[in-house]
Amino acid sequence: MIQGGRAKAYRPLPASQRRAALRAGLAAYGRGDFFLAHERLEPAWMGTADPAERDLYQGLIKLSAGFVHAVRGNPAGLAANLRGASQRLRSAASAGAPDVGLDVDRLLAHVDDRLAAAEAIAAVSPIGAPRRAGEPARIPIPIEAPAIPRRRR
Image (cartoon, rainbow, N blue to C red; front, side):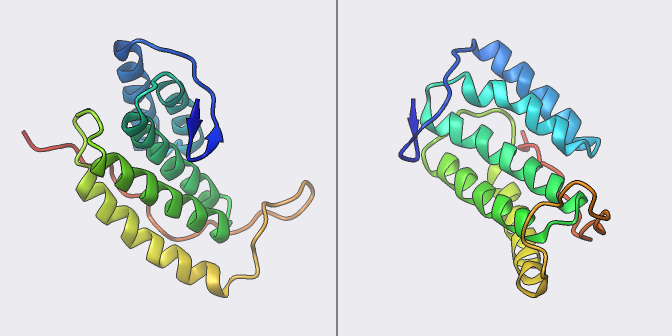
């Protein structure tokens, strides 16, 4: 499957299983386990051929990946992933992604707030690449991951 001009994995998954993957990913994210959230969300993203739904899941994956970088002290990685999350979530919202109970507009506002802060930190930070084996641990970036807001019913 082509997404964003590049070939991407597509492993069809029924909607019920994509929703289960979404729930598992959101639960991991809510606990602050951002790496696991990323892993749990991937089957949902790979499991649909709907471009808007793919963008929604990929936006959540990029949000999770961003905070993996924040925990690891990589401001450039945080900023890049938040930028990608904002773009994907915005695309999902404008293309009419399926309603999965999330308030994407509120989430976008939270992501964009964190993105501005992350870009400011990345602009003055000498850290631009992932930490190599044997290097001392970096200090986590003090930007709090946004809660993923649910749509009000």
